[in-house]
Length: 325
Image (cartoon, rainbow, N blue to C red; front, side, top):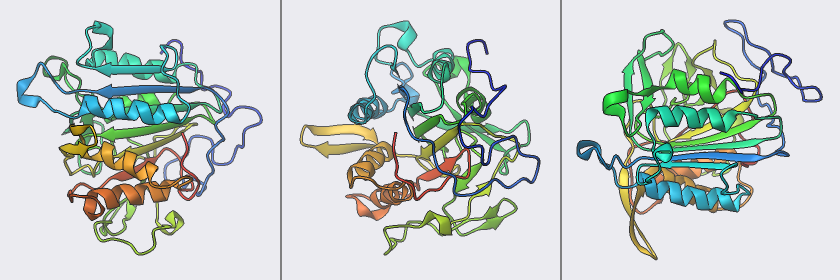
């Protein structure tokens, strides 16, 4: 992968070393790690696919989701320039801006190229998600999660293993990648090893906690009381990747219409819930953003949805620190 930051020599000099190094099988990372401060450049990739040329797969909300997210990250310091933001939507005439499988993978490489400690990267995907048979044995349910480019019928799916290898694995120490995936089956859509799970079942992977479908009285959730689990112990990144996903791996995500002051707009239920959650109050923790997303979707909003947003990370970071991009 020519042009990628080389991993040899990382962690970078002067950056805290705690928790770094590729873990051996069964290794448990140091918990409650702090994210490095954002002191460098900001760079974003946003993908919205309505599948305009595939009537049987057409969605109404993803392109609108991207426009909303561009406004949000713009207010957070991301600049909409060719050097710092790339938008792929299937309503654009430029072939290089069409969200084909090849363009998506190339855009992911662009996002992480040249990344350094202190940088903040942002990835947003709104479109179809699916599952295929796991071929390398790293999925407990035997299925890989996928995303679908606008040409998926001819080019196939983009598998979560490929997303991890392209977006997460190249990250250098001290670099932060925040991702929002609004699609079906997206719970572990980037194959990140640590998950703050959302059910009360126990499995070989660890302890899972009760659904948030029932409202919690304590809105200042202490995520340290929730046990993180390692799903794929061999996958690791020097950087910090955080994924807010629209639902569990076994769930679907809703494409909805939302009434606004500008009229009725299409959009993904999860994207709307995320934007409403981060707007609810300043200086929320990652745990509070997750709670407010779930509350918005599962009874706290105007309509209740069955999908339960998930939060996963590349390292065992402290979820009570302030959310920032």
